[in-house]
Amino acid sequence: MSRPPVRPHALRAALAGAVFLIAPPAFAQAPQKPAAPQKGAPATPAPATPAANTQGSALTPSHLALAREVLLGSGIARSFDSIIPAFSDQIRQNAVTRPELTKDLDEVLASLQPEMELQKQAMINTAARIYATRLTEAELADIATFFRSPAGKRYVETQPQVLDGIVQAMQGWTQEVSEYVMVRVRAEMAKRGHQMQ
Image 1 (cartoon, one colour):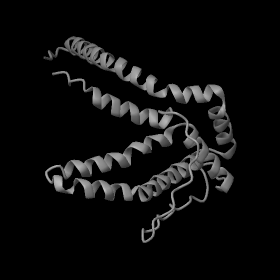
Image 2 (tube, helix red, strand yellow; image 1 turned 135 degrees about the vertical axis):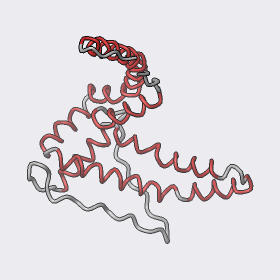
Image 3 (tube, one colour; image 1 turned 180 degrees about the horizontal axis):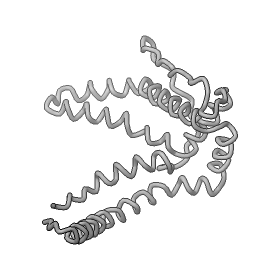
Image 4 (cartoon, one colour; image 1 turned 45 degrees about the vertical axis):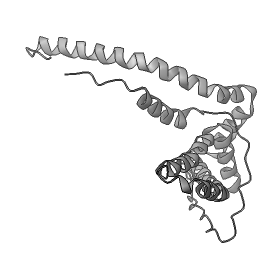
């Protein structure tokens, strides 16, 4: 059995996903007022509000506001910031064979920024509702208090460096563990009379 290659970008993506869920990856962000829709632009529908959280409590406006504060204060919402620019970059990349489009394409993408901000705010609202369905208002208040504290702000501030350090450590660790597991499996299988490559 051959050992799968270690792919740093795959480790970073997997770890970033885990950190996204359990540890804030970027600096704290103050809530921003959503951009007003452009004239003629379709309104962004608000996601349906769940009737209650997992504890059976109704989702009140204050509950949702705390969930949004936690989402923004933890830095998790900053993860959404790179998504829209990535779409724009992909569109530019697809048009690279048509340089005559560059100027107009850049202008169109710039003009769509307010609409894209609305899309991001809709995702922030959806994520806040998800938090609110999983955590009580009291729990969210405690978490928000932590993220407002100096320790909470420092926790959020250090996440990019912590993530980079963990990704680097995981590269060596995955190779070592992969080799260790293969050696152990071969040894245990040999005890049962099986030889493995």
